[in-house]
Length: 312
Picture 1 (cartoon, one colour):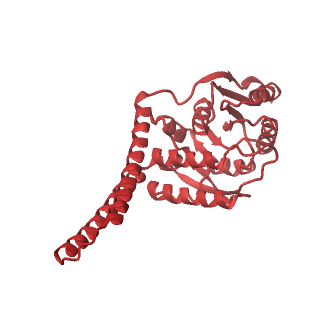
Picture 2 (spheres, rainbow, N blue to C red; picture 1 turned 45 degrees about the horizontal axis):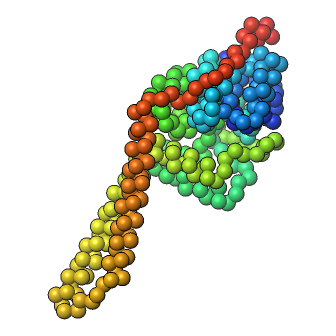
Picture 3 (spheres, rainbow, N blue to C red; picture 1 turned 45 degrees about the vertical axis):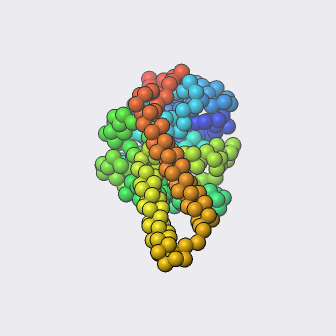
């Protein structure tokens, strides 16, 4: 059976559409399936719509978080609650085309354990969003030594790969990178990002920046290395200015360098403050890991009606 995990945050207008669209595609292909909705602390009527979908469709199972824990937690909760031999993760807004699930499933039947959905086109995006996304993926690709320029959360994983992900004890996870990091027999499938038919994106520019910083720190030590590089640069600058000052002093051409001193203090002070900020952010993440709090809390749950599925 294929379990399709659908994280949902304020997606009340897309629940019914997603249930119908994904169900029709998988039924037409003769694939046994369940739909695992994960309500990530939505503030609208998302959970009510999920309950309605569960009453009308026995394939629907669902988890409801006690509050908003984020998409990463929702995807992992869905994987943990899925019962299929393979699991697919896709967006509830149908920007990931359901038809691609069939191609992914057929590749899984051929023995592939991780089927990565890679973006052929990204759909309509602002220039700022496209540039910031490109910068983020360049950084994370170099850090992880994995090409993530077209990566997405749209993936199909074999049960062995799912168990490997769930066995990782870390609290700050980056599913998009970890699913590539675990290895296994992997293949890619291209897809075109679809336009939304209902609602609007929940990702503001500020939220995307915060998400990018969190994931870079959780998966890489590159920012810490940047601190070292900045320190070496300032050291070289200090050596050059020191030599210049000594040459001027011994040649009798020493000039009052009030402006130079102020600039040096500003540069060094800025580097120190930025460095402390980066180190402090890593320490904060270590603090979160050490506390060992659960990634999410589930307040309500709906089980799929397996007996009705078997009859149909």
